Structures are given as C-alpha cells and as structure tokens.
Length: 229
Image 1 (spheres, helix red, strand yellow):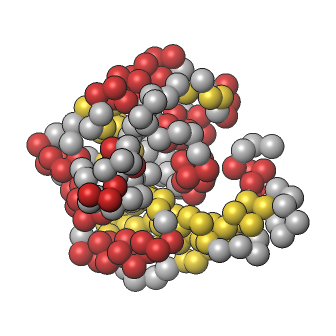
Image 2 (cartoon, one colour):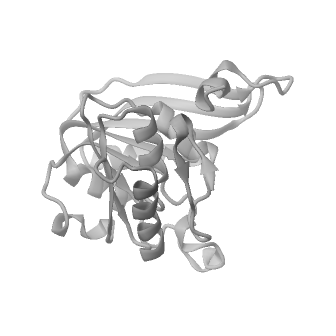
C-alpha cells in the first residue's frame, strides 16, 4: 500500500504501473476546470484518479482500463478511499471508445501511457508498458472523441517521442498549448515531458522547465511541491 496526499492510499496490481514520478508529476501538471469531468485513458489501478481526487474534491474521474485485474483494483481503491462517487472505472478497450462513451462527454482527458513500442523485441516487457493496445494515434483519437470542444488532454511521455506527440495532436485537432520539460537533475538531460493539448485550440505554446534535484543533488522547490514536503 502506498500513501498519497490528504490521507489517500492506493494498492497496486503486480502487473500495473508502480506509483512513480511520472504519475505524480502529471497530476501536479494538470489544471482542472471547476467541477471537471475527467477521463483517464489506460487508468490502471486508478492512480491518476486518486491523485487528482486527493487534490480536488470537486472533480469526477472516469477510468477506462483493458486489464480486468487493474480495473477491479481501481474500484477497490475508490471504495477504500470513500470516493466511489467521484472515481469510477470501466473495463474496456480505449480503441472502442465510441461504443463506450458519447462524443464530447468529458472536459479533460489524461493519460500516463505505455512508453515502449510494440514488436517482437518488447514481448518480455509487461503488457501495461507496451503499446500493443495503446499506440499514440489510438490514444489521441480516443481523447479527441471523448473531449468537449475546448477541453484539454494531458499526457506524460519520453522526450524522444515529442515530435510524434505533436504530430498526433495536429492530426486529431488537439493543439499543443503547454509543454513541461522535466529533468532528474538540473544539469542533466530531460527525462520526461508533460504536454497539454486543447481540442480546437489556437496555435501558441507555453514552454516550462523543471528539475527534481539541483546540480548538488538537493531536492528542488518543485520536488517539494510534488511530494507535499
């Protein structure tokens, strides 16, 4: 069991994403409108939903998850934290999202997707970490369907995939509006990117940079904010 902000806790399945800086940084990066209706694409055990609900009690988060075990754990986590009214999960394939949700049903979409490309070389990697069932075009297509006009899609990924993320955004009319480059150390390479895309948005990108530790290995103010220290 992991402990989150405001007394929230989470239990994870063995084959699901662990609680990591990726999810914590994405939850901090996300800016929700008042009474947001959020769809978590590839929601796993409900990690992002729990993090958002711990920060904003007014939002509601609907997860869609292919793994039945992770889906059941998400429902358990919602019940254990007494937020079943705010956090829900459906077991389904995001590639079939038009059959599950009506178009424009959500004000925000979020995702901490698999980082590794599908293919023979990745078969030893757990399914939750592979793109077999969740490629970037499929992910952006699902977000574009589910979002209302003017709604935002927030995603965390590897820096080497930035061009592909922006290309998918353009293809599905999700305009990149805000980009955060996150370094582990201030003097090190970018380790993660966090991107906000707006459905029907006009061109114009805000560029941000943060690091978890300074050049001497001391936690930064950003790190302290992430972990509520």
